[in-house]
Image 1 (tube, rainbow, N blue to C red):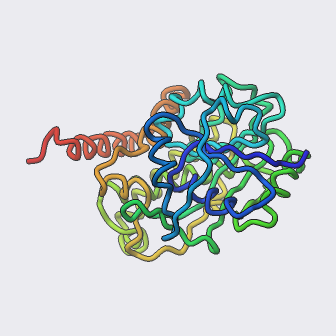
Image 2: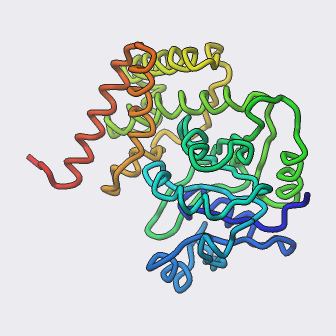
Image 3: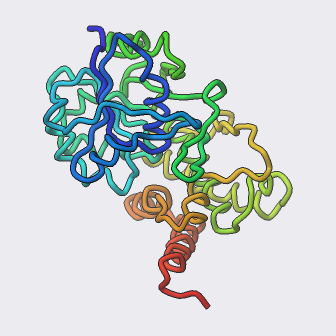
Length: 306
């Protein structure tokens, strides 16, 4: 079945990548799902992506029911809030991609929709928001990695996704070990996103300071241990992908703190604490990161500043 209709939930960095990559495809109908005041703002102001203004077709969840492909790209903290909308949008044939950070977004979705609708996925993208302009380097972005949860084969619906993006600038890669790839990315985010945010430094600190490197290694090992308990082997560190960033580059958690936004720490360290308790595995470095970043959020909120 060729994909002709694509609905997108979320217009942040990840959502903008798909809007940028699919808006010029004449043979598909791309809809940005929103409602209320935000929908009106999107209709009137559009989105600025890499300096260019985009005006995607904004629709309600009910208007896109039965879409061929639903891409969910909201912040982790908003995922549970949109579950009713997700349920309203899909039918038996809808493919659902949720290329969010973390390791449990698909499990959360499967509480309200059949797991058979979901194809597991992650996205590798380095982006930055400057004012209302979301920027990323499209040609070098690694893009979406996806696969069936329990199969190494390229299924017909995976082929449909490959065909959809084949003549677009969106990079997509079908992989046989998607669960390992999800956990590899989680380990990378945990060990690089969080210490950097607490210290307030660029990513060059991981190469230039043995102390930052020590913290990174301890967190990676905690993630490896939890992944093993969850049935996923990421002990071979060669799967960890470190992109060549400038030394002053700042990952998403530090960007959020810089801009006094709440972070996705619940998705990162919060998940590690929960899974550590589930398997009776101590995760002290992740637990410290959780409370340190929660404290920085409180400081940004004005709870204390002294």
